[in-house]
Image (tube, rainbow, N blue to C red; front, side, top):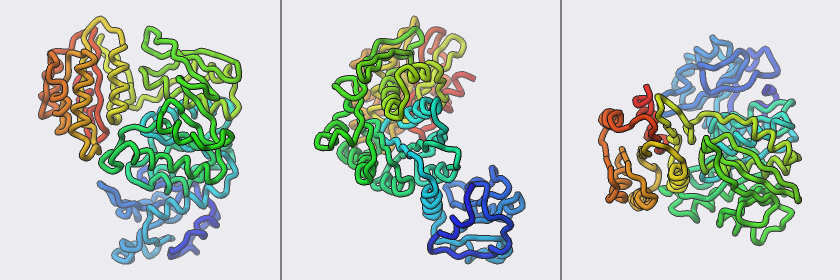
Length: 461
C-alpha cells in the first residue's frame, strides 16, 4: 500500500486533477498495464518495445487511480488525458526511484542487498528460503535487480515484513551507488568478483570498484558486510577494516563460518559441512553442480548472522527446491540429460560450469553447446579463446558453437576431436539431433541476449 502523502513528497512534478481521487492510499504501483489492479498507481515507462504512455486511457478504464507520466509526452498528448488524475514529471524512471526511497523510509527493518559478478540470484533465492524459516521476508522476484526492478520491489514493502532482501545488479559504473541510495541497505553481500561486463568495466579492478560500492555504502552507514574470503579481491578489501564491521565465510581460510566440500551424491548434488562456533553440520544442497557450493555458504553466513542455528539451516537446505531459471537447470528427456545454464555467461561462471560438467559422471558422451559471452569489450576475442583452450585442457571431445564471438571458442579448442561452428540455430539443431544419443549429457551456456534456450526447445520438443 502506498499512501497519498507519499506521492505529495515527490519533487519537481506537476499534479493534475487530484480532486478526482477517491482514496488516501493506493494498492501499489505497476509499470505493466496488463497486470494493473484496481486502485493502483500506473507509472508509464518508454521501453525498447513498448511505451507505457500508449496505455494511459486503457489503465484508467481498468481502475487505475492515478498515472505518472513524462512531461514531454503530456505536452504532446494533453487533450487525450486532461480529464485524468496525473503526476507529470521530467523522467518517470527517476521518479520511480524517488518514490521507492520515500516508501522505504516508512519502514524500520533490516534491508540486505546482494551484489557480485556471479551467483547473485541463486544466493538470494537460497537465502530467502533460509530467512523465511524465521521471518516474514520481502524478496526480489526473479532477477529484478536494476534501476527499475529494485524500486518496484521496495514499493511492495508493507507492515507485515520483517526483512527486505534485494538483489542489486550493474553493468555500468555508479549503478550500485544509485540503488543503495534508494534501498538504504544496512547489510551487504558481494558474492565474488569476476570478469563481467568488461566492455564497460575494462578489467577486474573496474568490476571490483563498482561492486564494492555496496560495501562502501554499508560501511559508511555503520552497517554489516558479509565477506567471502575465498575471493582474493574481497579478502583484500577487508584487510584494514575492523572485524566488528563484517562477518566472514570461506572454504580455505579461518573465518566466522567455515565450509568444507564433502563430495557429490548420485544426482550430482553437492554435500557440504559447515562449522561455526565449534559446532558442525553437514547436508546436501538440492541444486546441481559446483556453483551451489559457493552460493550456499554465502546464504548460510547471512542466515547464521540473523540467528538461525546450524540445525535450522540444515533443515531448511534439505527442504529447499530451486526455482528453475536456466541456471544449471537439469532436464531429463528421453534418457538424455540437458543442463540448461543459458541464463547468462561470463568467463568465470562458464569455467565453473565446465568444471562441474567434467566432474559429472555419465555412461554416455558429454556435449558442450556454447554461444557468445556478451559485453566483454576489447577482451572478448581473447576471453573466448581462453575458454576454448580450457575445454581442450579438460579433455572434452564434443564442442558446438554459435554466435559471432563464439567462433573463438572453436579457435581456442582447435585440436578438439569434434569441434563444430554453426551460423544458424536450425542447422545446429538438425545436426545435434543426429549426434546426441540416449545416456548423453548436453550442457548449454550463453549470454541472455543469445537466447540459447530456443535451441534447447528445438532439441527436447
